[in-house]
Every structure is written in structure tokens, then in C-alpha cells.
Image (cartoon, rainbow, N blue to C red; front, side, top):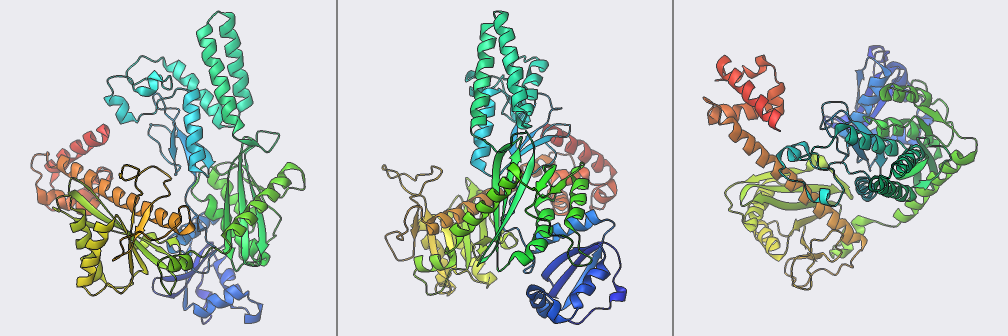
Length: 617
């Protein structure tokens, strides 16, 4: 691309976006000084890295967005990368948020819940978050173990209000049942404090506290209380045994290691909390080398730690990459931004030896092992061979139906490209009055999908059996699309009694093709079948979520119909503009009064009714 007029580019912090055309973002970058940074891109071509030269050959224009502070530039860049997924950026392909424990100590009888996003909790104060856990199974196992040791409530606030008798967990001595029983607040608060000590990594302090209380109870001949404390001590020790001690001190840190092979550059991250290893994450970028390590770290850190309240106070790095090209933030400036975001100091450190250096080596070894396992696995090619195609399966569309007795029917479509989810292409289709007929809903969907036109998938996968497959096949044949792509259906495996086996982890799922009575010969546990099962689960969750949202909106819409003077037309206008009860309640009076037919009297009635709905929820 031609060199822009640098005199028109501000000398402020900000973000710049290279694009090849409208809506096609190639690269997003941040800079302390936008003019100085962009000038570095238009040096002699021979002095530019190969990746930069390739990007500039495709780019047609560059736009800049100024920010007030360096921190704003970091956050804006991370948000734009996550939104546009630019081809030439170093992306976190596996950017799903970690699992966290959330607990609101200021709520009445707090409960411990598992969440993927730090944010406001169920209580009225600011919740505390603990973790992270990279494995859902590890998080759930720890959560169950904590409830066995410390009988906190598990039910939601709404469930707690509606209970008339204790639940099963109370009879198992895993809940004090504050929903219906008179539980002293100070007794429950003591349980919460002990859980916090354990989650903060202060296990030795907690064990000393419990041991002292047990001995005191025994000396006072309160043997039942002493036995309960003894069981808590055993449960805490059992929980700690599952976590490897990697540091002699109870410290919180993340250790990052890097490795290079002939295919690209890998990064491993170990999460240590309270001196114990909680989990790990591994990433790999094909085509990169150690010469890209400095840029990768500077891009990885703000993306990985953006919008999280669980950034540790210490992040260990494999080496000091030093300051990069002029105008780019150094890693130490990244640390300043992370510190401001966390609200306390975040230190980036390079260990010179000892256990911390061993952690760096372990993180790099994990990344190397992960890269070795991934090498040679070409899912598009494997799927192409499995479905007897001459070409690999690059684009996959997966469909599932969800409804309640035929009402609020939603057909969810999820799209995967090159083995990666592309949420921007996911769609939800509405079909009413189908009386619970999945075949009719899928047939109607296939007609609508055919009318939408390309891009066509290489594989269209239906969540269902032969009946669903035939319904979609007939609708596509009518439109002349039967030969455009491969059509298949994935059905749950069967038990010995012939019933659908819906147990988690079932490996006996069957894949059917049109005109073939027997299922496709896919080995249980194979890469191809596991991937297809993952796609089916994604489609199921998406369709079910859209259906539940629709059903909830219908229920809330019927709530609004109870307001005197509110007809269907007025309610439809409110939903079209605001989309949710929460948005309506937070809207200014001026915005609400712009709705035709909503005067002051109806506005006051609406405000009162919305307040009652939100209070009840």
C-alpha cells in the first residue's frame, strides 16, 4: 500500500488497523505514539520482517483510533482482535475463559458457584473470585469436595426463597439448610471464612485453625463437634493431596515457557496458586520462530489477561526480550498496564534459577508435548477420508432443533471453519406452530437455508437419526442442492435395551449418510468421531440456549400484558427497541417516552411493574 500522510496521524497512544477493504481487517496493533509506530512500517522493504511485508502487500488502507491512556490502547486492541480475528495478528485460538469460583461474602448465607466470567455476583456486594481452573472436571471435583467439607448452601437465591423443607444435601450433611432452618449467621460466616482461607491457598493456616478447634471441643467433651472438625480436616487434606506442591511458599504466580520446532512457536502457561499447581494452558502458532517471541509475548499478555480479576501478582517469563521497535510497548510497560488493571502491582520477572526456573522449563515441556501430539493430526483431511470425499472437509454446518411441546421452536446452526468455531456465522431460526414435529422444523429450515445461498458447507451435520436426515435430504433435493455438499446425521448410541444412551462421555455415537442403512465406520474414541461429537454438543447447547431465551422473553412479555392499558402493539415496540426487561428498567425516561403510545401515566405504571419483576427475579 502507499505510504499515508504521516503528518495527519496523531502522536498519541492508540490503535491502528490495516485493512484490504471494507470490513476486512488484516492486522490490529497498539502504539504509544501512532505516528512514530506507523512510520516504522514504511521503511525500506528489505528491512521489514516477512510477515509484515506480506501484510502490507494485501493492505489497502490504515485507520487509527486515538486513546487517552496506554491502558485504553491495550484494552481496545484486545477487544478488536477478539472481534475481528485478523489474519496477521497473533491470536489466542483457545480463548475460552477459565473456570473460577465466585463467592459473595456480603450476601446473606453466601454460596460458592462456578463461573467462566468474573463480574457481579448474586449478592449485593462485590463478589470474590478464586482460581483459575483450566479443567472443568478439576473445578467441579474441587467444588464437590469443598461442599462435603464445608456445608454451604448450593441452591440459588430464588430456589432458597421458595423452599419449604430441606433438600437432600442437608440429609447428607452437606448443607446447613439456611433456606428453612434457623442457622446462626456467625456459624455460617465461620464456614465461609474457612472456605476463603482454603481458596486463598492458606491451607496450613486453615488446618491449624481446625486442629485447634477440634482439640478444644474434645477437651470440653463436645465429641460430636470434635468428630465433625476431624472430618473437615480429613476432607481438606484429601483435597490438597490432589494438587501438586510446586513451590515451598504459598505464592500466586503464572509461569510462561516457550519452545520452537520446525512447524512453529509454542507457549505453555502454568497457573500456581498458594504454591500449588492448579492447571495449565498451551498455545501454538504455526510459521513463527523465536525471532517473533518478543512480539508474541507483548501481544499475548494483554489478550490473555484482559478483563480478568485473577491476574496473579507475579508472571514469570523465560527471558527478557527487551524493547522492540520504536513506538511499541515494552513488556515492562505491559506490566504497568496490567498493574493498573488489577488494582495492585503485577511484576514480570525472569528467574535466574531455583524452583521458578524449573516451572518455566516445565511450561515449555508441556507446550512441546502438546505440539508433538497435534502434529500430524489434520482434521479436515481425516474427515474428508471418513466421508469418502476427494477434498478435505473445511467448512462444517451443524443443525439442531429445540422446543417445548412444539412452542418456541428454534433451529440452531453453528459453523466451524478449518476446525475452528466461527460464532459470527452462527444463526437461530424461528418456526412456530409445528406441534413438536422435528422433521417438519428441519425440513422448513433446509428450505430457508437453500434460499440463503452460498457459502455452502463441505459437510452439513444434523443432530438426529435417519428420520431427521431424510427430512433434510428431501427438502434439499427439491431445491437441487443434494450434490452441493455432504449430508450426514449423528445419533446417540444405544443401550442393550435399544434406548438412546445419553450418558456423558459415551463413545458409541453413530453417524449416518443418506441411502446407507448402516452407520459410518468410525472407531469409538477416534479423532474424527470425538470432533463430530463436539460439534453436535455445540449445536445442541446453542439451540437450547436460544430456545430458553425465547421462552423467557415470552414469559416476560406476558408479564407486561398484565399492565392496564398495555396492548400487544405497544409491548412489541418496547421489545423491538430494548430487547430485555433489564434494558427497559435501565433506560432513561426520555428514551422510553420516544415509544409511540407511551405517555407519562403508562410510563409510571411500566416503571412500577418492571421494579416488581426485577425484585422477584
